[in-house]
Amino acid sequence: MHGNGTIFIADNDVKTRDLVSAFLTYQGYSITAAEPGNSFFDTLQKNNVDIVIADLAYLQSVAPDFLERSSLLNPLLVLIGYGDTSAFELNKTADETVFTLPKPLNLDELESLVMRAREYQSMKMYDRSVGDSAQHQLLSTTMIGTSAPMQALFEMITKVAASNATVLIQGESGTGKELAARAIHQLSDRHAKNFVPVNCAAIPDDLLESELFGHVKGSFTGAYANRAGRFEMADKGTLFLDEIGDMKANLQVKLLRVLQNREFEPVGASKSQRVDVRIVAATNKNLEELVISRDFREDLYYRLSVIPITIPPLRERREDIPLMIHTFLTRFNADKRHAVKGLSREALGILCNYEWPGNVRELENLVERLVILKGSGLIVPDDLPEKYLSGKTAQFVSVQSPGLSADNLLPDGGICLNSAVDEFENNLIMQALSRSGGNKKEAALLLNLKRTTLIEKLKKKNLAFGED
Ligand SMILES: Nc1ncnc2c1ncn2[C@@H]1O[C@H](COP(=O)(O)OP(=O)(O)OP(=O)(O)O)[C@@H](O)[C@H]1O
Ligand SMILES: [Mg+2]
Image (cartoon, protein in one colour):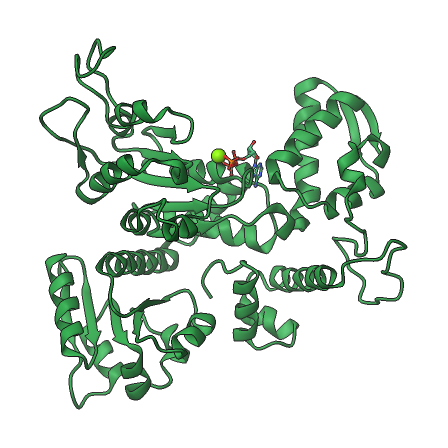
């Protein structure tokens, strides 16, 4: 293998081919091109290619079955479609190892996708050689969750921990983004060094730069001595950039520079400093939207989201609620020397059907409050704060075991049919996935669906985790 790896480029458009070749050669990749007369797949196998970049129309003409075979191939496919509507279809049916990039090419985006493709590939290889059991177990001692999306999340965390790739964790408030970031650090070979969190929203704008990069004595009023920044403190460890969506434009530029060059200048310093830092960023904002509204730099977004991880809200993994309640209850009972026995079936049912806008944090706080107020005995619906009782969260389906008969599911107050059906569907899909141990093909069989239809549904429901 040469330098960064070998990339195969297949595109009849010479201009694109030359541009991509030049750009990636400059980045240290070695480039191979299609060989006329040879079959597409033969050429790939013969050349031991790491990543394939191919034009969609070209692919469709030389290898119409490429999608079915893409998962069998060692190299990953990065496809470049012309404003082609079939690219849309492709996005829906392709698995996670197929990346799409629209023409005209944005080189930042190309670079980010290539980095991501390489990470996926190294994770795939890691997966084959090491397996994930020990780390997986370690992870489940800190993060609770037996639901399919959580198991997929654990798998993802275990895999990315082994690499040095920049990770962007997105998810609603209280879903466990910081917990996931810490887990990535703990499972990485940087765990003996520092995990340094920086809350980009909590530090005043004018201090954030010195906070991140440090400053030299006398560089501004109040800078009485040299001071190391968080980047330096995180050297050989992990820097956690929390609430990255709140970072101001001028700092975004500076951060981008560090990510590109791995060096920075402390405030007031004339020389730059080098660091070996693994970056994990998190936000509860939708960064894609911030990019569109120009509140977040697109180039920085690509740099950060080499490995994007989305933690689903608690309401999309309700089957984790009972175990979470149990774990938190045990912990708070021990902390406070109380003896709350548990929740009545009705109380548990109410909490399982609640929407949890504050996600796991809200659940954790509620359990703490219940333990303090109740002290002992069984928690019943009357013990729950008003808002948990008043919602229109009808208990039409018991979360753990939905009956298949719809005979008496309609409560007196009526229900919202769409969300009820949706939830029923989610529930069955999750059960199938959990029974198949996360194997989508087997789960699809259990549901009498095509595997691609199941994957499409998971994507639509934002449950597209893990590889097949
Ligand atoms: N899967 C989980 N298992 C156990 N505890 C969890 C889990 N997810 C989150 N928590 C707990 O919930 C609380 C919130 O988690 P965390 O701070 O990681 O969320 P966050 O996504 O960073 O939230 P915010 O966006 O508000 O910063 C923490 O006390 C954390 O320990
Ligand atoms: Mg947080």
